[in-house]
Length: 547
Image (cartoon, rainbow, N blue to C red):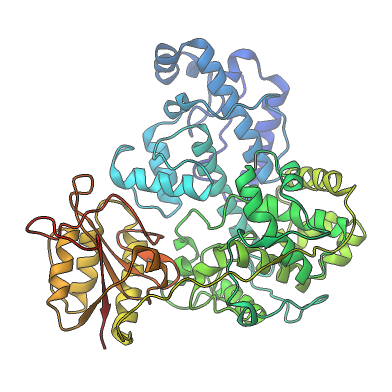
């Protein structure tokens, strides 16, 4: 009977550990029987003959029946195959993939899942049903492009395992690897120059104003390259890839195929725009340029190629004219993710390798080795096939200018150092807390630390700030909230559906910070009750810090 100890939830970071995984996987392929197939990946500690009649399997049979158990095990086996391949281990465990079975929740103990989430730097509670744990699971699901339910299913478990192994892969790449996660950054750029973002800052980044042109990789082609990519996501990603490729001289089918294949692998099929883990594992990593407190979390992996560390963010800032050091979250937008990847591609002279068909050489330049080779090669083969009948021209599509919305009337209010301090503290508190349902507690904590008194529920913050000489209330429509300056405090009224309202701090980039960071809310089932009963007017109130 095969025994496997893959340590998937707490990866063994040694070379011997990876070899142990490879040997065990090979043994599975050699002698796996139908009975053994039902036991793949049941827990971190390994498999033995006794596991077949173990308590978990018995509970699973009682709850779902033999057929559903077999389906769950087959799904996990398929996911296990993908995880192994992400670290260069190639084994065929199952011919079919079904990653939709929710019954997989019971295949790993709650302690295993909590340990895995903690290892990713996420804050969790004592149980899977704790609000903090559910918030952590939602973070994993959101970063993986899954529905944010807070519940565990096969795809979520696979996302957790893959994230842990991707973190391990970046750690192994380390310093001197020449990879995008290391510190050896090229000073110059070969091939076409990428225009400064300063010259194009007025252009919006959504795709509603994209005008397709000859030579573009279409959303349909992108879906052929990346199976499972939704039509909506393909339509969002393709324009930014096309513009970045045009700017970087990635202008023929071979170059485009290699570029898209590498990015698809690195981003999990264009799903992962930001590393799921908190980034605390990079704290103090001088080889990444992380020399200041908080650099690990601030400069975690972002974008299609997961640029990581202060040194790499600084290099990208200088190359692209965008201040990713001051605003690291911008490295995770679709526009900048594509442009950073194209900059790195050019800086390593990868067009030349693509022209020669040296895809392995490209893999080494990006990864520092050949991790995930099988997955990268599959993307590459599909990309070459999808683009073989294309016109062979450079991408010519472009974003057209959109009319600007009516500016928010701030009544002459100006922000200064006080607003910056509020935003900085709010962002820090949100990243440290990373939960849901405690917006008032987090914002009150931030304002109290800066000498602004306050307490109570979210909606009550409006009347408190209205009486403070350090804030000026301004009239802003909900559709203008995205234009608010960094540090503005936004309070939503309470209603029957939202009995406590909502309070948050605008970050000046379309995001807000309270007990977590999210896109700034511009609508919802909020009311006009600020205490003392409903009154007329807007259901949102905005306060600009003064001084």
